[in-house]
Image (cartoon, rainbow, N blue to C red; front, side, top):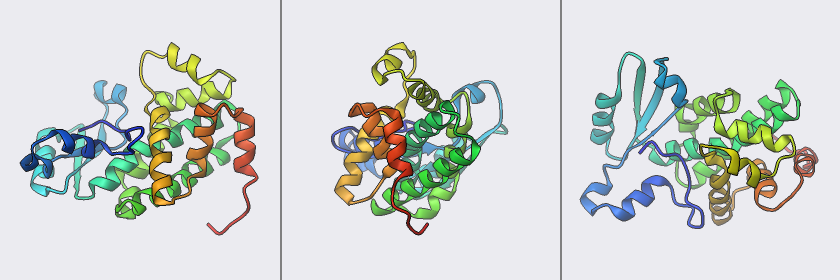
Length: 230
């Protein structure tokens, strides 16, 4: 699956949802494909890389052979949990990066959002059983950089519009494509609550999108958090 998200309500990853529907013999060969893969660039023939993860490395290598090309380099990884969480949660951080750009906070602030966002993703993924090193790869840092920096990112675009004062409902109604990070925020907060993981950036985005907290107040709450070790 190349779908990136977390199910609202259950907090299940895409591979877990697929496993519920597939016969038992097929469940172990589920693959997740994720990375810095902005679709418009790939369709335009620009080079990109991705990672295919599966607990069944034969399945991962088979998917690698099918999808690898001179313009699309495919790596394999056995850590499907880390790859899926990286691909899903980076969309929440991209929302925050869009808010940062929309409010003209500058590159230092956005670098902070990206870096601390990666720390949040890593904490949750590791608590769920992932290898934290996976998040240093294409499905983590790679995807995060692309999605938080590109004007092609739907989640970044959504965040910029939030910063301008538009309501989440109005933004969603006007978009002809889906900003996956919006619904993923709910799923992430569900999982974080179950695992006892703190995710301040995700919580801030959740408060704005689903709780009606003004964007300025959510930003202030983040900036006024007590200092702590990195």
